[in-house]
Image 1: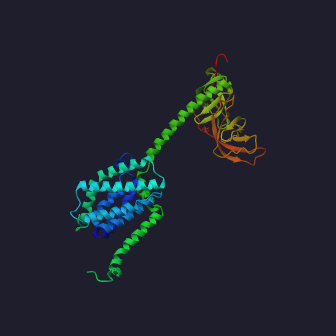
Image 2: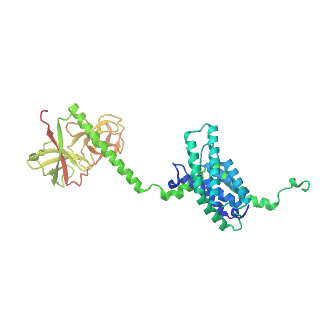
Image 3: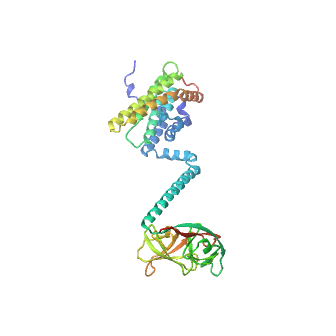
Length: 166
Length: 253
């Protein structure tokens, strides 16, 4: 675990995710579906701070987001998995900074998250026509927003914790 | 090569000390999860309070409600007129004639007033006199150019009224003060303060469904039937102009 997590207030920015989920700002919605704010926050964090920090913050985000929904669906396992995966990617090879790479990782992460939710809905008998619509719109929108938002966050984390790999 | 027993080694104190903030964080977030995000919802409500729908939105809503009520009122009035014609409850139509209050004496402030329109303008004894807000009284006598109006607050005034919510008739009796008394015929009428008092829907002496006032207090122990004090909706104490409902007989009826 490197410098980012040691700076308490950078950790506190994780609280922005549930607040943005609750606010669901209208200009940042596609066909009524907001982007996956959890993916947009977790991707640069995990890339910058490593797999353990990524997985732990994935768990934190999962618990926070699950608390906002009364149903049995959970985002926690996929967020932990992706936090770990992105953290490992950030530790290997060249730093991931290119817009296309960030967009692609966010797209895959959102698709995986959406697919896990769709699967859970299917298992719990909650599936509806809106599931596919939400999955597609959210994946596309998150993939489009990620290059801009994740690059900015990476830049910010790098300034706050010099010596990070990406 | 790994030395035997390395896997069984306990984590160092430094690692445990480094991990405890994370344990604390996860415990806190677990608490949030178990409380169904109560803290998050409250924080969001606090932060988003400046963006909640404000006075502008409520004014739009009020204007829309008023428009809706106005439209419904017009439709109901038209419907009511048509039904009354079918029932032949009222043989003629009415028109409103504005009249200035030309005399009001201090001794009979709550009893009567004199208005500047008379029989030459079509006024007749018994015509209803309205003020902004509702019924004010009835014309008791007319001269060619003036008319004397007995107010609802006059002790001789007896007007049959209707409390729509409980669907009960009553007699509005003037007390010589600003608040007349509503006497009921039945027991257990169920009237309570705030109920609207109107002229009877089936009234032929007075125009039906005119607002009279609002029940201010109820005396359930009155004998032989309950009584209620009514606050008149028309400001009896400050009237400059009134409107008289003049009956216009329809030819052929």
